[in-house]
Length: 166
Image (tube, rainbow, N blue to C red; front, side, top):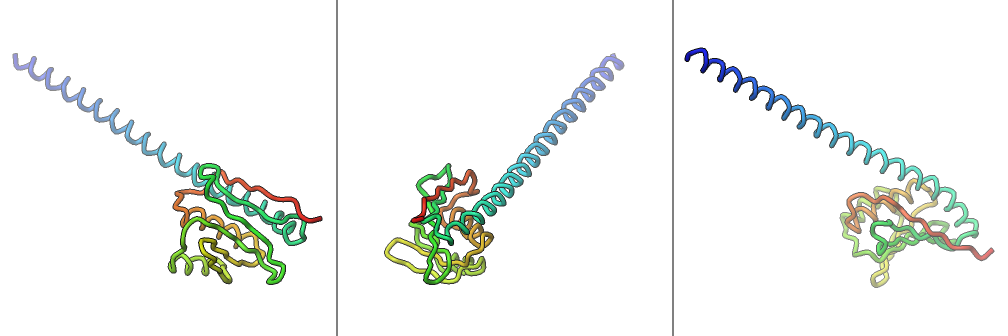
């Protein structure tokens, strides 16, 4: 009878060890999968941001030369949130206009750190004036889409252009 209870205890302990092993293995693989998924999402976000920067670089030169009148940027996930880029020939800079929501003083300070030169507020239209630099324009566009419109990640960016006067 003593051997019988010893065998039952050994079998119970071995089953418990197997359960703990496979449960911990499953938890570890889920954790690794979540980390890998977040790294892939981060890489996609950075790649799309680089692509938009280089695409805007070519569009800003067309906007400056007069081939384009305006550039409209929005996210495909939130199509109601739109930014309009216009070339201001008097000041020789790019004007980013939006009607998303009022921008607070903390956000304006952050925008100034990103390269904002001046801003105008006309009723509900916010106009940000920035230099003709694709990196500055891209950073401010992403900041406005993510921080001002409260999107977590601005991805699936849609860029619409107009024909110019020429």
